[in-house]
Length: 308
Image 1 (spheres, rainbow, N blue to C red):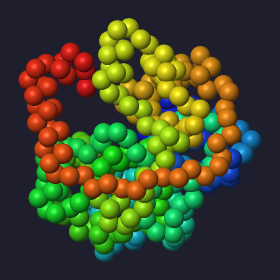
Image 2: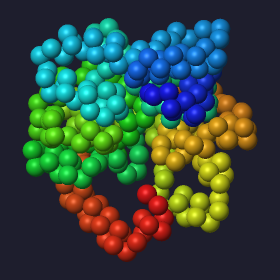
Image 3: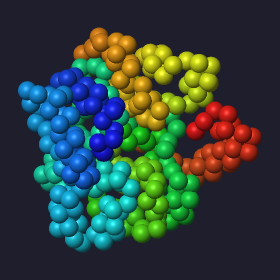
């Protein structure tokens, strides 16, 4: 998490601390010392009584730990130095005890109701579900298919729960999908990695009614084109059963105004366990169809008209 995200992440962190029904150890992993200082100051203002245990670590500390932790994994060491989002796969383990529960949360995940996390399984990975998927960029996904890497469909990485990552498999798989040639500008490579790990290690999707992902689909885009505000779009989402809302993309910029408008002012108790659903394999035919449609939509000017 970078300090630049505090414009919305401050509200998300506050909702996590305020609405969590169980004690947590909150570890924020960021970049340089300026980021560490800014995030630390933000947390002091959010939680001045230190009701939660929280700590902030910069990349220098993570690099120091990774040097020994990943000594036998050169591809993983290189991967860590790609897009900052990719370190969500590798770095939580650097600050956790072996086998300990790790719940990895994006800074744009908001918790509107009183909630408890689902029990993290002894083995496997829990990921959020979304109707599409964010398996991008196209060329890396195609390389993965051609290398025989299977990926789960519908994965969203706003919240991920696990106790361990299969580092041997990750080392091998990174080489299969591009290794040192992976595009460091693309945050979405992280999603490919989690989707592959999910099928390799097993697990399930978190319940999509409880762990909600904002759908920036055609209906939302048309509503905004017609003049509907972002806050009004969020108001139309039924959050009565939502432990969290992953406000991905443009939705993260609406959270502060939504709070001011009172959208989250009447939290419900959703601390009970919710059941998830199994992973589905992402078929290559679906992938090819998706990008054929995208190319056609681009030629017809859809994205220029609608954005995205």
